[in-house]
Amino acid sequence: MSTPTGPASGLPVRMPRPRQSGRHRRPEPVAAPEGAPALVLAVPGTPSSAVRGLAEEVVSIARSELPGLNAYIGYLDGDDTEYPTLQAVLAGTAALRTERYELAKAAGREVAEPEGPVAVVVPLLAGPESTLIERIGEAVTESGAAVELTDVLGPHPLLAEGLHVRLSEAGLARADRARLFTVATAADGIILATVGGEEAVRTAGITGMLLAARLAVPVMAAALDTEGSIAAIAEQLRESGSTQLALAPYLVGPELPAGLLDAAVKEADCAAAEPLGAYPAIGKLVLSHYATTLGITPQPQGTPAH
Image (cartoon, rainbow, N blue to C red; front, side):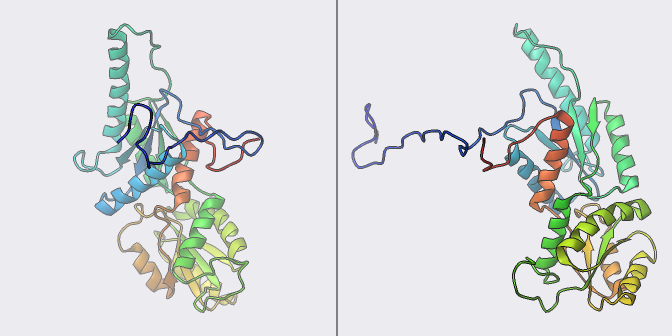
């Protein structure tokens, strides 16, 4: 039990940690500006408990990178009960901002009338799936809210890193080229599988080049939703000398129609890694798109200040 002068005898005294000085002191964490627009993650695909868990983890990563971030999840195919639709989330966010303003005004506080976007919508998509992007845009319009809509997450080096990790987790690639060991099942040719047709394939190819540089094996993109695309790329890789192929989904996961990946694995006759899922880079890229839109620069954790 504590006394008026401090802790009882025998208990440790917690002293405030002095702030480091000089070039290697830890930086003060950057927090979301007061009144900043909300981040709304637009989640495609059929909602489920697994999809919700993935989306919540992505949002949690973004919040950990920017304290004070106001973030929500809106489902493109939600039901407005267990899984709120993107339209409902945006309309509700706009109504909440108006309500806060009215309450502050009624209390006699001097507050500026809200301006600018009420939210920044970030699609949970690695590549440009045009149908889903169009539907997200329609949902934004239907909400009636002032919203900024960002690009999809890729292409980006962090996605190549995530693909590498998923392949190594499946035993299809070495975890680190610098380590002198081999994986007996390591692939010597990678099919980078995406959805969204030719445009998505072209964009995936950029990340594919980054992945090829990491693995030192050929990587070629193909569309899961284009008939014959996977088989054609598999044949092309085999003709060029690859004998052990692997399929790497260039997808977060929710946007992947059921059964499409299994069919592609059979078509290519090869093993496959898991989709990117809630790999930490996904949350960081979501936040990066939000922050870039608003001109915020989150301070990476543990980065020395100069």
